[in-house]
Image (cartoon, rainbow, N blue to C red):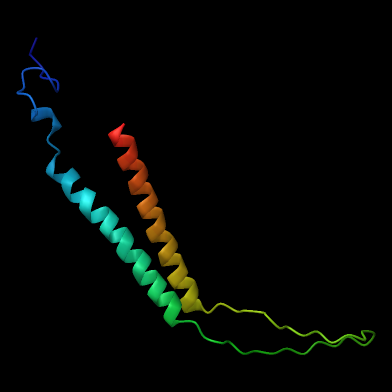
Length: 105
């Protein structure tokens, strides 16, 4: 039977704790991409805020009240895309933080 070295067997102290290069890169790149996505999404959503004016006509012969749509806000497609990118960036950051916390335990 061949010998198998498991971490800690036959290795020098401290050797098992060195992170692999892929982990070091992902420890920096993943949160950076998440943060960039959040910032870009907020900027896109902020710049696409526009007052959308529209109207409609409804016939209500027995109604004595007039409908006033004050406070009604319509969200443009650019704002929706910006908010979606922001949420995606926040999900990436939350996933990365969960992995990081789970790995440290």
